Figure 1: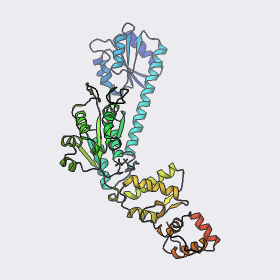
Figure 2: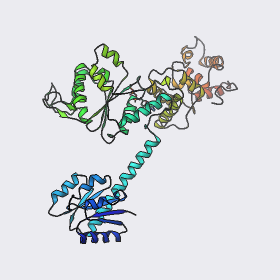
Figure 3: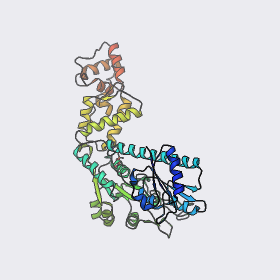
Length: 449
Ligand SMILES: Nc1ncnc2c1ncn2[C@@H]1O[C@H](COP(=O)(O)OP(=O)(O)OP(=O)(O)O)[C@@H](O)[C@H]1O
């Protein structure tokens, strides 16, 4: 049963309101002042209706004390100012006295409904977080477990984090996970790739600029740091920043201030910076191409992502996950990786890491006609496609060439490898085999995959 506490010193008004609400099926408690209210079990209340003017403390004092429980403030008509103040303090709503019954009941209903939705949302979000502790990040090898653990620890700590790892290892994914699990999750997450913006533009992009700050600046523009105010700025490839920009960034981190290009005035910002790099920043500091003070500011906490080749069994799980994603995007169902494809994936070095694996699988989904993805669909360097490059010798018909090629290679190649080497689909290979009376050899190499 919904429990409402009425805090009102005028006994007549309090009792009338209590009667009205009891008749609607609400469970009611009453108090004549804030201290009296506080002697009750406030956390069991679903809503508190409090008069703004009470003996001793004002009813608005309850707002912060009982949060997130909603407080509906009652004011007199003469006191619009206190109503505004109550709303600024976080009251769920206010109602002017004398109020009519219908208005009071509708206001209560609306507040309770909003509170219920907010609680349901929070519960759902918590649930999701429990199931996917760092959403979207696949992998359970010990190095990735450590990454997850670090993400959870630093998320709430509000410190600057330096995320390191080779290209495509998931640095941005980690930055997003930190943002999503921290107190800033409802604020903006702005990602900027410092390597992608030319040196002469990066200052203006990051810090903003005034009108006329440089040739062509016809309007004032807010920078990315200001856009991330209240949230997180993810600076990818931070090692590529020019020295002048490094100095300005240091000031943001030290003083929480930005000064747009062409402006004489600084502005306060509240931004959490997460930075990433695949470069050896220590070496850059030694070579004096990266500021030492900025380096120490950025690496308050560090998270290092392991390369794909060091993730053991995760490689397979990631491959299945990325295949499912690509298949869904490309509207293909029932696709799987053959054992040979998995072996090829394990053998490959993956210099581009998870991104490269994702791209290879996407390509494979497009190239594959049948239900199983074979090594040649992945087009990795190991795929034996070179033989087909040799054209048939002069005078030899394509049919002869096809027959000879299939007979010569079918013991060492799978059907998919053969098809790819010949530049045709598996279905076409099967059709030509039937037409030319060249049955597939048994036992089939692909059987059991
Ligand atoms: N553990 C993981 N689980 C699932 N997907 C992942 C994982 N790691 C990376 N990815 C995916 O791989 C791709 C590359 O990841 P991301 O952009 O975060 O890498 P990065 O290290 O920031 O790359 P770069 O160095 O090029 O900036 C993205 O599509 C991302 O979703």
